[in-house]
Length: 126
Image 1 (cartoon, rainbow, N blue to C red):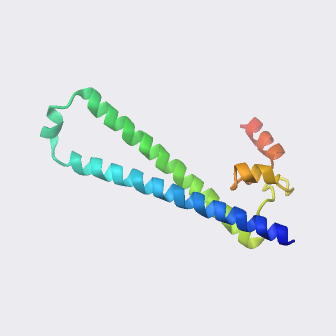
Image 2: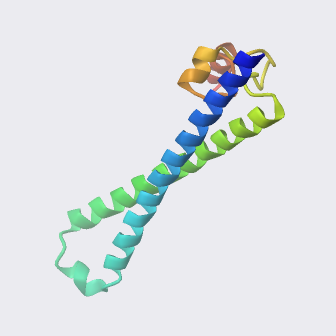
Image 3: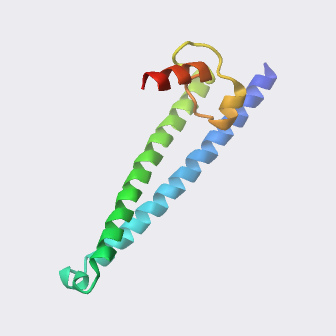
C-alpha cells in the first residue's frame, strides 16, 4: 500500500508539472497573439506596404496558435480529470472496462483514461 501511495504522489507531481508547463506555454501563445493584435491596431495603412504573403503567414500563425491553444486546454482538462481521480481513488482504472491501466502506460501518458486494449478498440471504432 505504501508503494501505491508513493506512486500516486509521483503521478500527482508529474501531472502538476505538466499542467504548469502547459499553462506557461498557453501564456506565451496568448502574449504573442496579444502583441500581434496590438501591432495590427495601427490601421489599414500599415498593411498597405506588406506583401500579401506576409499577411497569409500571419493568418496561418494565428490559426496554428488557436489550434495549439485548444489542444492545450483539452490536455489541461485531461490532467485535471486525472488529478480528480487521484483524489477520489480511481486513478489508474480504465474508464471503459474498469481494469487496471498498466503503470508503464501511465508513465508515458499520466492522464490516460483507458487501458491499452480499450484504447485500441476505441481507435478502431473511430
